[in-house]
Figure 1 (spheres, rainbow, N blue to C red):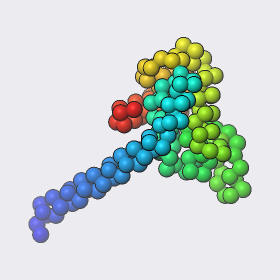
Figure 2 (cartoon, rainbow, N blue to C red):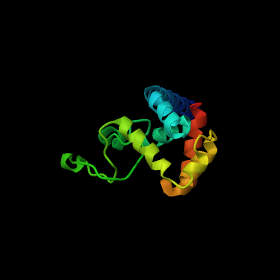
Figure 3 (cartoon, rainbow, N blue to C red):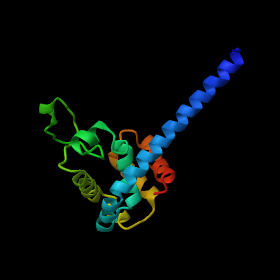
Figure 4 (spheres, rainbow, N blue to C red):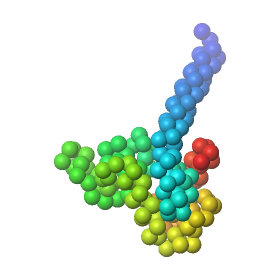
Length: 158
């Protein structure tokens, strides 16, 4: 086998692996969206926060439900607080919830207490919501976080 053939085969293998990873990630995202769409729609109606914003933040913060904090603590938003998992060997600064739904509800309650909330309530402009949440100190890397949330909304057509 020539060096050129070896390089070509290696590139094809890398592309095939990337395609498999993208397909798996897309399937994971679709599953997560399907599972949580009803609760985000209900909370959107109740709190006036766009469902797409709630869902995209949950997807990013929990790695579409696959993150350790989401799995062990039912925390899909990276909300800091107390938990009982230290006794099980999982120490974390993140809050523990009895259910995923409780995590989603707490996120909306938390957002509804922010200064910008009254101004944006029932506004459907996702970009304004993401920017306001970011500026409120939600993320330690606001610009990167905003971009990830907006990309998640666009990529998943939320």
